[in-house]
Image (tube, rainbow, N blue to C red):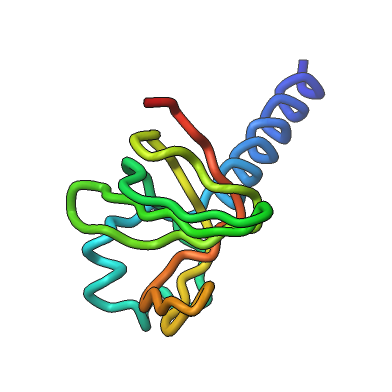
Length: 117
């Protein structure tokens, strides 16, 4: 009985630790754009609709609008289609250029979930 309780508690703590360390804090685009230095090189999550996208050979950028503002997300895994609902996580950078175009503040994608149109 004692062993079962201890094993159950240990499993619960392990699952909680994995969940809390695997999920970055979700932020609004307006907060990121208002103070990009606060989020620089920190992993954050955002969610919204894709309003624009450009891609070449698996690399590209897409713009997410979460209702509070818009931000460009740069990726090396292909771009989602316009109108898709997307959750992305990654690190925030400023002064990013791609294909001769400057994007200002961007999220460098490390993971993505597409939720459809």
